[in-house]
Length: 125
Image (cartoon, rainbow, N blue to C red; front, side):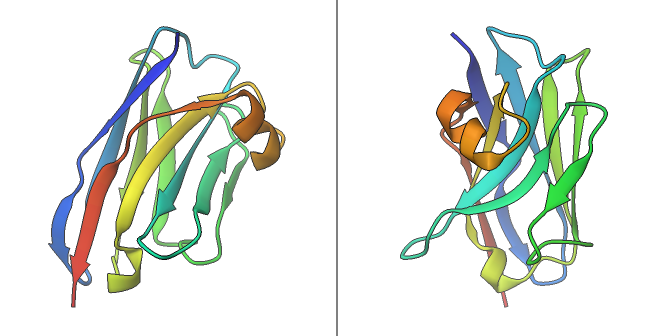
């Protein structure tokens, strides 16, 4: 069974940066897609980044984070990362990573992927 554990969240001031990490076990990232989504209280889940083939791309970003957030993976370490720069209060949410074979779309990722419990990111103004 594939398991994902996120870390690196915390409290940061607006304009600051954080790097989230996601450790994947029970499977390989090779040939699979990886991504990040977030969930804020009272808001719909937002799909923020999808790397359609880990360690290679292509990569899609939500408009809300494009140019500020950057996804990467280290397949040798089975790790996925999300570098978040110029953070804004509206970025406050629980961030989850997702991995799976459905790299062509988020719909397939939800059907065939696995995701972790998430890490809290809080951005103060």
